[in-house]
Image 1 (cartoon, helix red, strand yellow):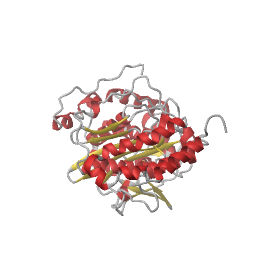
Image 2 (image 1 turned 120 degrees about the vertical axis):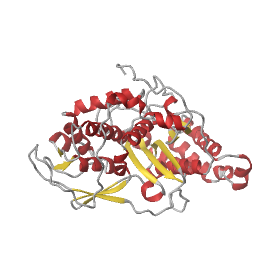
Image 3 (image 1 turned 30 degrees about the horizontal axis):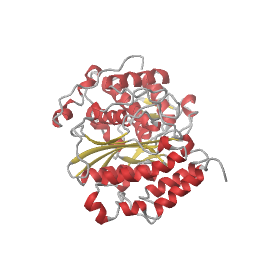
Image 4 (image 1 turned 180 degrees about the vertical axis):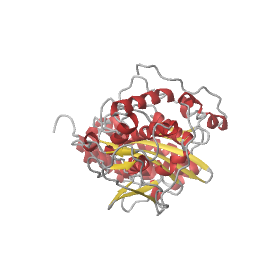
Length: 425
């Protein structure tokens, strides 16, 4: 046979090479303990897979952007392609939630504000809440559905309610991104369904998550909830760490073909407060296991502060976002996933897993109020078993740049917070 060797051949070769023990040899206990740190082994494993994917013409996607941050100090513990532009998918909803929290703090809306499913909201592609056109829920319930189920119809309904229109709300998202110094980030919609112009980076997404926790801790229970009960439906989170990794406190997953499988996760364990971002996973298993691996490496002392703050990480200026669609949803997807499984088998059947706990997830009950007239207060009191948030203190938008200052001080980092990006970005 002459000509270019097929992608299938190269990826099959990669799988065979990895399965017969090259990676196992590198990870042998005696060899590892004598010479290699876990982070070095990660690099070796990725380099071997990268070599094969390069020959297959798939080198753009071999390395997932990953980031691990100490939330108490903002110190970076691990960063790999953290500034690479990437499609955020439903991680977009972190900013959707943040903008809504700001409007709650300003008093322009309340947790009881009715959120109605418009035809525009109803027509969004899945994932969806299952609510019909003109159905109404409280803003509080809508936020739970947004965060837990990642419902795209609810994202649009919230945007229309809070912003007056979807486009106005998206403008608020981008204005907030500018104030946060998110130089790789641009939003086109409030849900994350794919648009090539909708981009962010691991660094920027971590900062959004940090702002949520620091500015609005009263809403963090939303992000650690595993199930929303809505009528007869159980709307479940895709965050496998909630039920498999002790100490997980949230936050959000995301997926479209162009992004691969993404996650932002937070853990409080053994006195540590950690945040991980993993982008571009080939499966939910890989995404969740890689995040858990980062956490365990930090908790075990194998990852130490780099001396850099997440705020000073540089985004890749001028770089184009990686398009994972050919690998995740294209004709080579099966072979690509097989190669990734061979390179990183954690969590597969008959393989060890980092997600070893069997934890009960918290549940929340939302109520479909049917059709109601706007301007009518929702029934009170809410059922007693629902979490009740304290009244948020008013927040001045201009003070957003000072939100993370206490963590910088705790980390011994005296740096300037990011300044607003140029208006044309």
